[in-house]
Each structure stands twice: as structure tokens, then as C-alpha cells.
Length: 124
Image (cartoon, rainbow, N blue to C red):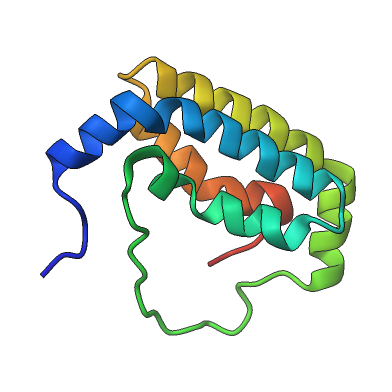
């Protein structure tokens, strides 16, 4: 049994609330990430973008870890300082623009799901 809300409920949410709340949500998350100290909350907010956009819960799959898929914290920190903070801003802007086009929503949702990796090379 799926824990997702019905497509009708999700569509109404998107039309009335999701499209504009996602823009506000992403802006706050990005600003938190840039402050460095706000990164933990910013990343949690980024991971919840599909829920804010369309009430879609992230489906978690239990997979065997290959042991080497996650980059070290040092590599991820350097990535964030040199690339992640500005690349995530551009990535977020493009994804949000695609959301507003309606036909671009599938690509935007994929981009939102990739956002933790763009910010800090985080694999989940």
C-alpha cells in the first residue's frame, strides 16, 4: 500500500500552493547553505523539495552499499566551497523555471532530486 496522497490532491496542492512555496523554500535553503553554519538545515530542506512542490514523499529504497560511493567529507567540503554553492543556485533556478512551465515538471523533479549531489556531492 502506498503512503502517497492521491494525484488529484497533489495536483490541487501544486496549483494553489506548491509552485510558489517551492520558490520560497528553495531560496531559504540556498541561503542557509551559503551561511555554512546553516548547511544541515539547508540540506534537509533541499531533500524535502518534492514534498513541498507536490506532496510527493521520497521513496527510500534499501540498497546494499558498495562501500565507496560516498565522497569523503573533505572532498565534499572543498566541492561546496569552490563549486557547490554557486552551481546549486543556478541548478535551483533552472529547476524552478522548469517547474513553472508545467511541461518541464518531470525534468524539474529529477533536478530537485539531484540537488543534494550538486550542492555537496552527497549520494543518498
